[in-house]
Length: 282
Image (cartoon, rainbow, N blue to C red; front, top):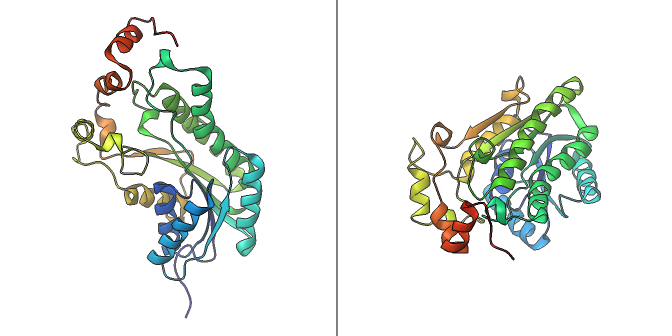
């Protein structure tokens, strides 16, 4: 019996493959016939992700590579392994991201800011730079941005800057890669349930976010993965250079003021000093 699923025969490479967006995106791609290689730093976590995916999708082809997405040599080795699955590379999903934590601008160090840029922007550049020469014409790249790219968020200046830069990168890359038949787009998630944002999912913080969402709930990993699958597949074949929000309508409003949370983290006196433009020493 022939396999008529839309991604049959294709191979996808996913960075941040052990995270919620990476795992769930893999599930959606696998269900439609693609083989997937997951890359993340720790093999034991990747093994758990593979077991989860094989349990969710019968016959799933899931390869693993343990490496750092900030390291070009690791990424090139992972890409070679992905290409070897079927002698082709069709889909790249760059999900690595995050921040050094909630920290007012005047309490950030140069290293803090650099790390935000490396985690969110450099990892995407490396994945794109070294995957494109291996990709099949008609291939698709999907990047993960954030609503922080569009809505200022106190305490996340470095993160928002990196995600804003990522969306500009997507536009520039789309202009250059179109001649090669490669599309590149981005999903801009709002607050969603994941294994690295427990603080934001607790009350009263969670409620303050939901108040700013017309659809009245925070996201689930499947909400984002469905958008990734759309941008990765033939249904979006006339789209490139775009970044769109999947956020329950959050961008129609504003980010909540979480100054009280940072006061709990750093102390009222320190935050008062920051607001005065004279941050505490040390």
